[in-house]
Each structure stands twice: as structure tokens, then as C-alpha cells.
Image 1 (cartoon, rainbow, N blue to C red):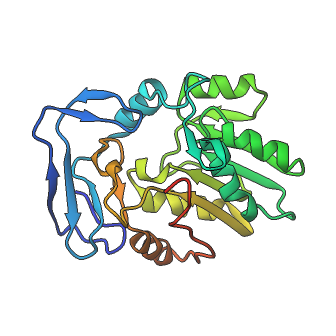
Image 2: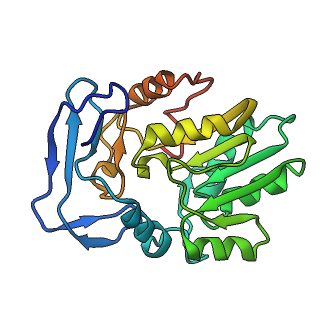
Image 3: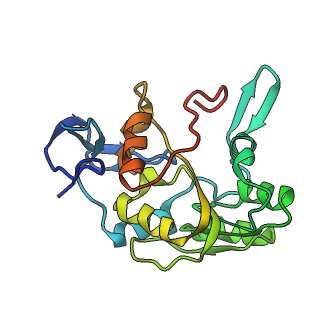
Length: 244
């Protein structure tokens, strides 16, 4: 049964159901299936109705997922100052929050390591490692010399201790999102930091139609969820001029 991560309630109603027998994934594949999204009446959080099994998640992200697996498919934003890669936008976003006295950083969902490479180059004092579910993406990252391991992180995984955990566009794919974050929090060193990005629905965004995006929050809903888990939000940005 699907439950709300903010209230724990399973009081929901159907929010959207696709008419065609096909769905789109966030890496832009079209697959057979029916999209069913529900909305929790007491919080307004939207989620997939059906749950993915661990076996299905392994199939999706280890073998089938194609984003960041070709070595040359990075998204480019075109701005008044010229083109800028998605990884550079993300790195510019997170860089101010990687403190000089940190000694370790772990990225979950590191892909082929485009952001992680920038972290390694800019913060040589850090012990930097990454995890990603995709076999192809990890092979590309390892060819760059990055310490990235192929691994899907499920709720009971034992994770290494680190000063920073960074997850960029990951949490919307996680089934048991509460247990997942609690596990990361217990793996942070004292005064550690969790750096997250997630699509938000402050204004209706198209990711609500992705079959592999399980959760859809507004920024206030997501902050309420983090607060319920005992996390203090020290910075948030919902109006980035490039990546909205």
C-alpha cells in the first residue's frame, strides 16, 4: 500500500491515469504500460500508485536506463552568457556548500561521473567516491579514473561514513524514500551535510508524467518531509536562473 512520506497516511485518490497503453521514462524511452498517479488528500503529495519491486528497479537502472550511459549525451543549456553543460550547472549549484574542512564526499546516482569529476578536480583534499546502478555508466566513470562502484542502494544497505552525501535527481526514483534518507543520515559524520536536488511541483512540471519518477513534491512539501525526519534545511533554491 502506498503511504504518504509526510503524514504516513494511505488516504489518497486517483490524480491522473493515462489513456494509452504506453508510458514515458525520464530517459525518454517509450514503454508499454499504463500510468497511474495518486494524490494524498492530507498533504497533496503525488506518487505512483503501483510500487516497483527491487527486481524491477534492478532491471530498470542496472540494465535498461540510458541517461548518462553513452559518453556524449549531456544536456546543454543555452543562456545569454553562452552554452553551459548540465553537469556544470549542477556543480556551480552545489560548490558553495562543500566546506573546506570536509574530508570526504559520496555521490549516490553519480552516473558516468560528470559532476563528481568536477568535485575531484576542485576539492583535492576530499576522498571522493560514488555509486550508480547503471553498469554502462559506471564503466564510463571508471575509465576516467573515478572511484565509482556499480550498486543500487536499497533501504537496508550499509553505507560508508562521509562528511557529505550528494544526490542529484535521485530521490524521485526511490520507493522507500523515508528509510533511504534515514540510512544516509546515520552514515553522515558529525556535522555532515546532505546535498539534494529533486524536481518540484511548485508550478506543474512535466516530470509528473514520467513512469519512473515515483514521488512528486512541492518545495514546501519536501521541506516538511525532511523536517519530519529531523533534518534542518540550511539552504534551498527553487528559482535557479538556468535549471528551473
